[in-house]
Length: 97
Picture 1 (tube, rainbow, N blue to C red):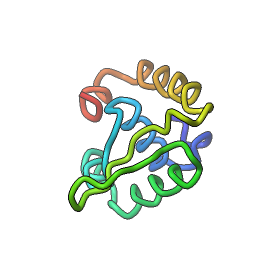
Picture 2: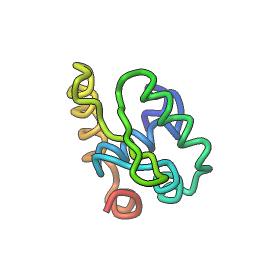
Picture 3: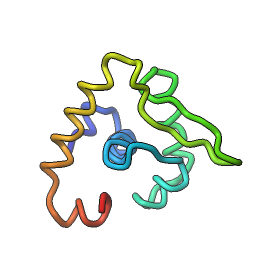
């Protein structure tokens, strides 16, 4: 849908997942979308390096969530919420419920 804006389908999936669930980890997101964990991990690192996300270690798992200190995050989340609300019900049920 918006992969041209976000750069890739993987980036779009990661951002929409985080918008819906507020936080996530690479393997969990990858399993939800049937993607390679390395692909998701790359996107999470890119967004963390860009200041959109922050992470913390919980045991051996690195959990990513929104960097609310970044002034762009609030507007990005509004856009992502609009995208989530416009998804077909079948897609919402499959990936976000």
